[in-house]
Image 1 (cartoon, rainbow, N blue to C red):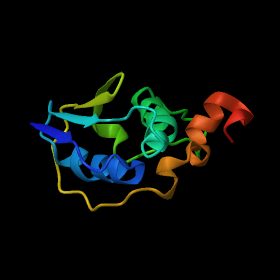
Image 2: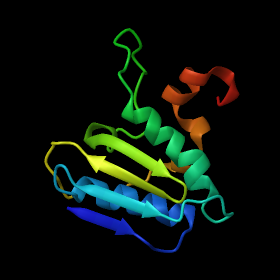
Image 3: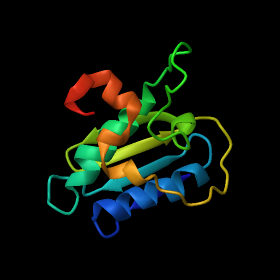
Length: 127
């Protein structure tokens, strides 16, 4: 029920780990990603990926907007909570069943300007 990512500390690898493991974690399980501190190798995870997935945590959608979608539609339905402190983030799974997802990391995972929901939330600053 717990996955700990203590790997390369490269943003691309950290994001790949989240997209690979999070769908596979049992309901109520946790994923811990450590060493997200502001070092050059991890910066994009902290400054580009985290804002997108945190936006998804609170994403409600607008039925009047046909193009309204979460940043990460494969992860968003599985999120229960995200807790970040200093050098660590804990992603909690909700009660939806775990599944063997194909590993697809969206091109914009490390570029928050590609997420329409986020750019709509903050206006032209990000998009």
